[in-house]
Amino acid sequence: MQVLSDLECTACGLRFFRDLPQGFAMDHPVTIAADGKVMGGGTVPFWIMEPFLKGFRDRNDAPIKIERRVFKEHRRVIVLNTLDFLYGHVLLKLYNAQHYMDKYPDLGLVVVLPRMYEWLIPKGCAEAWIVDLRLGGMQGWHNAIDTFVQQRLGEYDEVQLGKGYSHPDFTEVDIERYTGIKPFDLANFTTSPKHVTFVARQDRLWYRWPQFKFAHRAIRKAGLGNLLNGLFVADQECLIRRSMTRIRRSQPGITFSIVGLGEARHYPADVKDLRTMRMDTAVERSWCEAYARSQLVVGVHGSNMLLPTALAAGCVEILPHDRQGNVVQDISVRYNDRMQLFLYRFVDEFARPVEIDRQVSAIFDHFNLFERNNRINIF
Image 1 (cartoon, rainbow, N blue to C red):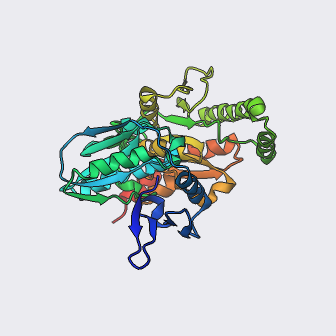
Image 2 (cartoon, one colour):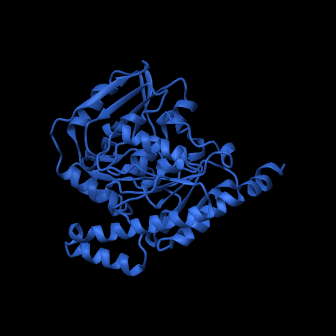
Image 3 (cartoon, rainbow, N blue to C red):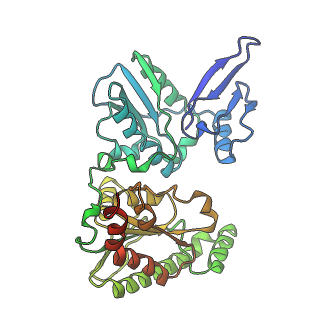
């Protein structure tokens, strides 16, 4: 959700709005006249411009409940807006909070976030403005939010706007301050019981063959997605099971977890299936605890990998061809040395279970040697 300045040209009296530098507007600011004529932003991507114009032209006057939660009173504050209609975008902006709390201790941080992220409010912020609005509704222009913000801003002596970078430096993020869960300790990589978590999405699948992906897309366009989607979900399930079978052979004694929106299935005793269709804070925390027990997480590229990689030691990511330009954007990289290359592996979107096993086993089998050569025996 964009933050606009309401301006007027002193020469001609034209009233217009312009994006303030925060979030995606850092690179793609929009300037639009009060009558709706776009004056700037010719290079703004459609996925930013289209929702913006829709909201600008059809403003919503519906009331919205916004809770103001004050942890520590401050007269001088930084406001960090994390509101967005995509799950990953909100989380990425929220990752900025730690920078402002650590680098500007004399200023209070005010975090504006959706209700579903309430459990991730970082320890140390001064206030949280919690918006009761589903992510899909964050695309609009909501007068209730604007009214609330304007009323609050007048209560401070000084207000600065947090830039909310879309891709902050993950190595500086202490995820425990957000989740309350300590991430996997790399010092225990080889001594902790071997555990891998599979992140299974049903809206972005791991496909066996290119023909399967093409067929699934064609079926969706034909309006038969709900009817036949289960066939492709079942095939992904088969790929996950076969991957586990191969990993068991290579890594005796290993255990697994599965997370994701979906129905839990019957698995052997060494697999804990945590999938559910009913999300709440307890489920979120149980998933995070599974990531934190995992040396590795395995899943298809997407925002679903942000928290898993923030808490697990590393990952094997299945990267679709059309997401090559977004590589690593969904990985909460924990290391600023060569461990990045060793612990974060990417495989083709049609990778077979044997390739998943190859990457997982390579990390387990060669961890000690790699760490000694690249972390210990160096200046």
